[in-house]
Length: 421
Ligand code: SAH
Ligand code: SF4
Ligand code: F3S
Image (cartoon, rainbow, N blue to C red; front, side):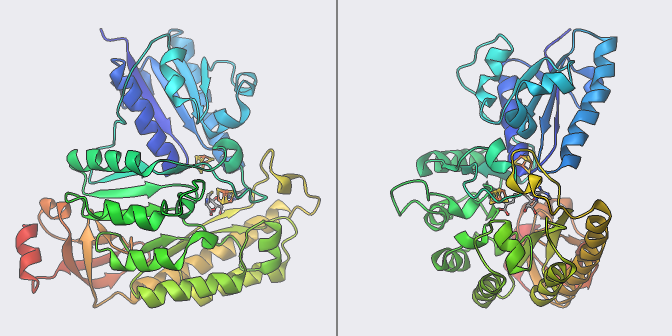
């Protein structure tokens, strides 16, 4: 019987998902087999997220379940990695003594050592599908006053363009048609090099030349890093999708200042305007926090009015959660939980209205759909042969719901229909 089996649970953002693909790749190279349930595996790995208290609690409650498995079978090894592991290291053993191995986001390649094995090379085991993740920049230098990421991912560090292009070509040769470039502030790519030619716009131009790739995406954008050059490059490159995730966090300038977000409401609105003028069908999504320390009812109202003004295609929302090591966590003017929750409810309703409005304007239009997504990242359902999702096809939108658009294949474009079937 093969005793080298593993199960990995991944919490958190795409960066963690990309890390889990690396971890799985390492384990495959060491001769491990992946299991789809924890009950069957001899090595259990929890890849954790520490962005909010709820994410941290989720990780520990999963670990609690695994404790029972270990009681039944003491040979099981439990590993914890990811952002909580990077931030708290050995303290994990205090809260969860049944954990055997802890390794942080910067120690992934040390995993073979921790398992008393050695390894010379490995490739990420990418999830099967049409779209692949490609991290291009690690960490973050912004130190927003609420956020743990600079403590869990370290300082900003861009990868060399040659390494990225090599990996992109490998991805293409493995049969993926779409690449999503990843970074916490993806458009600060290259700022940490002396060479001004190393930037996201130039990287996109090179990636656009890879034949087998149909589409290129990039997340997450920081409002202060989106240059005019980048906007016009995205507009002009046919494979780069017109979609930006640009977290705003608050619509009030005073709150933004205390969050240490280096832009104003007015600057954000101008940026959105500029992007939409260049690319009218662009998708723009955002993140907002309700109940940041000191936020008054009036300041919260500014977030609501900003959402009305912009009409976003989607927004992630959360109640402010105090995080260890971050400045805002110890400020005296914390907003009470009931008020945070009440504001979050109002915010979520506002976001739903906004998304509905944004979806309705696509009814009657024709969008290019690949892997179930329009270029602007909207989910599009249509009937047709399963293989149709493997090539970009044109779909005429007939109906819109809050979750997705529904349409029919548009057949006037003969070439598209023939290549798609
Ligand atoms: N790098 C991205 C965001 C990364 S974290 C950016 O700069 O915008 C993802 C989202 O989690 C953030 O946009 C923010 O809205 C939310 N978030 C981060 N820290 C939080 C906290 N302490 N409480 C509540 N939400 C938080
Ligand atoms: Fe966190 Fe994003 Fe701010 Fe960096 S820019 S500290 S990742 S919210
Ligand atoms: Fe969470 Fe770490 Fe991502 S804290 S959001 S998994 S970078």
